Amino acid sequence: MTAIPIISDDLARRLREAGLTWHPASGDRFRIEAELLAGSIFTLSDMTIEAHQFGSGTVLGFNGTTEWALDSIAVEDALWLPREDQLRALLGGTFRSLAADDRGFHVHIVQPDGVARTFTAAQASDAYGLALLDLIALARV
Image 1 (cartoon, rainbow, N blue to C red):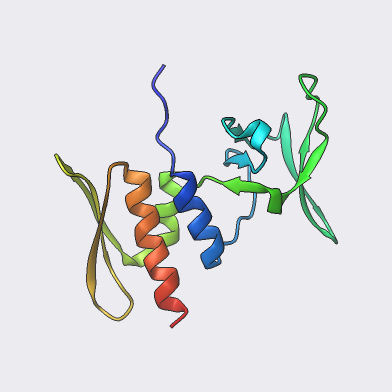
Image 2 (image 1 turned 60 degrees about the vertical axis):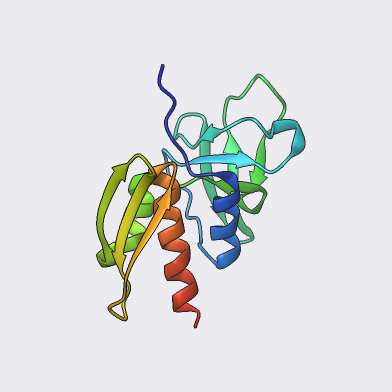
């Protein structure tokens, strides 16, 4: 079974700290920010893990989970690991291309101010994430 490349935890945290908001949806992957579960990646599913919206915030409900006693957690206690397609969609019209060579993956964007930029990483998801982080920082200036 081939592992699905995911964004690095460090970059996911940097995106969250920069202000990227997660609106949990079926198929989203995340980690629970607890040492005991540090190696586990969870996938939101309408069948087992659902996002429940309450006036006080969003909680992730573990429906029918018998392996361990976790009913729900606040979304703030989870680290969203956006997929490549989600990161590309968040880049919107700034995205131009993805290329790969022996140095890694290169995401080419054109910032709203017309400046062309390239972001390189070992995984395509991280290259997309670096480009998005740059756009978020640019929007805050």
